[in-house]
Image 1 (cartoon, rainbow over the protein chains, first blue to last red):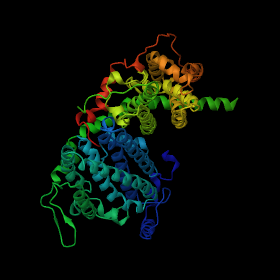
Image 2: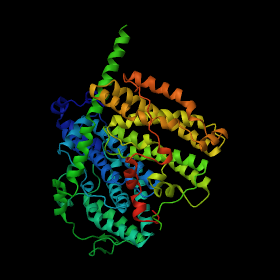
Image 3: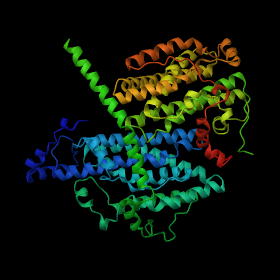
Image 4: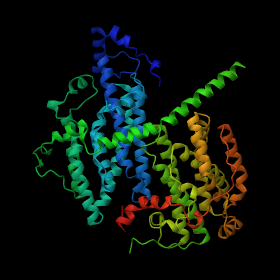
Length: 330
Length: 258
């Protein structure tokens, strides 16, 4: 979508962002109305959403890489087809999300360029490597499981295009989550070697997955305004706790041990986890995770290697348009 | 030893199904290598989609080959436990992806054939093959449209894309003859109305090619030397590497359920 098509000129924000409009905007949010692309919105709301939606889109696209790493090695034809379809779904999510972000006035190209330049973030979880087939099961079970916890409340996000994209994304993610769990179940019912592979994957992914919910509430930068604007409806720690409570019984059913010897269940039934190593989180965020450089290199290579193809498509489209104009003039 | 290659009794019908299954699997595998690395997200989606169709075709054809064989083989044993000399696919489909032009020209040559082939196979007296053909024909028609549009865009795009597309055509041309070859076993199946004679499709295949390639301002090569051997398990060096990746899990952890 071309950004000119939408009523998002900067002058709008500059000239008209007054107290009255801001109050009307907040009243609409409080009344649970959806904000649509052509509606007036505060510049900061637009900026926050553009950042969040585009980061989400980048995560889907970078997230294709760790799982894509196993498409050519999936152990059966059924698993191969399912994994390929899954990674293709992630790409589709990326496309919807870029489209949702474009309704806020930034083009896909600009957003992608920011990511390739290292200026925009994507989910840190994809900076960990997929070493064995059990990692594919674990990503589906835990990474997609955590994503669902984060995304279900987003289906009610105040921004209409994002909320609607999330409804479709969540349906597919929940299918992926069940598929991942089923891979784990098959491994856990298999040989000792397969079960050990499953446990090893859980050991490596557990803590990074808990970090997916973001920093603890006490230190989170964006939560306050996002909550006021109903972009965010639960805090990082609330969602993390929900996820842990849902996941512990699933691990028990698989016969796997969560790699947290200090974990206890309190009187209310909540599973209390040990302290998370936020130093690791910060390091990965700063670019020092095991795969940050590989992921960026892979995305940049695809972009650079594909440049001549995109140029050819654009050149052909221009020639064709020219021919059509010439024909119409005859 | 469970890691050993399986043996397949290649009756004419088993071999026939196996050859088409291998074509579909190997080409599907090649296309799946693009997933996450394509020039634009729309092509990540499209190439994965085509790969999924082909892997789906392969699964049906392997299952049918296993059933026709009547032993203990199944789709996964046929795919994962035969070595390079037991694979029966066309040399064309195992050729590496190369650049986007090479991938799309390979797809174009194959899909232009597959579209005609599956449509013709819908009249097979073998009801399973006819049913697989009915489904595959619809898929191949879309694959052909997608590839044709790209050949035209690349050929009539920029100087660079034109040169790359022409290079891919010149490089892959020698692998197209194999699609139309028939051996004695297949001749018997053709005679029985189970298979069709691919030689009868060559004229229309060439017309499709010429139409698209001339619209793309490209040209077909004049040399008519054709490489052969894939159908008999004499492959290029590329296939062994592809199989070592494809089969790595089944070879490393033999006999397990995944």
